Length: 328
Image 1 (cartoon, rainbow, N blue to C red):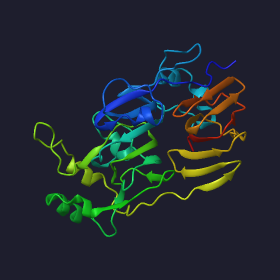
Image 2 (spheres, rainbow, N blue to C red):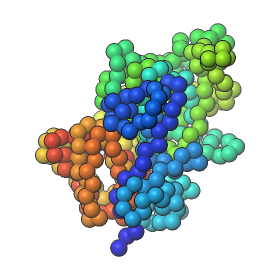
Image 3 (cartoon, rainbow, N blue to C red):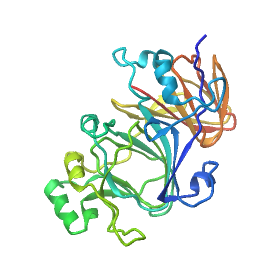
């Protein structure tokens, strides 16, 4: 009998100046006091945060401990070349942007390996859950922008003229490979799947000052060295239908990102992909059944099903939208 089973994990809340309270009001997260809750880390194995199991006999243990102790059960055929990764490779989070975030860029794996301490690269994808009128996403450089052009704009405090921006709709998915300049605008709530990295280079912070009258630290040279200058304007992904109410949002070398839109009473069968599945509910409620038990997920709740869990099915009850993430 497998040791692992479908895992409910305790979310880790991160407070930053750009956060708010919508993780509670929109997603039902049990926030504490304060008005700067920016992120809910749902699934994470990193030196900066560790998910802990909430359910079953493994309650209290960390995701990192379990992934390293039971790699075959966690990853199954998802083991690359038979070698277990040093850490659980994906990180799922929810973000509440009450203020526009700084303009950022993330390294790729080769660049991240040279950092001290080393980190993974950070390729990510966003799913827009809420967008206030006029809210913007900045993704990619404007056509024709090169290093010299963006360096000149930064010197003049006018980085925005080099950035591609658009107003997203709820349900849009935006793919941000490592090296892509990006920023979330004020008024957005998103779900994000990414590599298990926490490395960010801050290129521009909109000429803002902290309470002490000083700007936040920037990483201009590191950013300029990291940017993929061939990555021009980024548009929302075009979902590809898969059948049974599911569609593919992103398929890349770091993860596969699918969405299930299930009407009342509709179910879905998750293919046996040979690896773990991360499931999170962004609308409604869903019951996840497997040969190892039954878990019901409400809005904003997440389940990690290790590779050893077979017979995974979804039952939407009154209807649900579920995000489904795994390794390629």
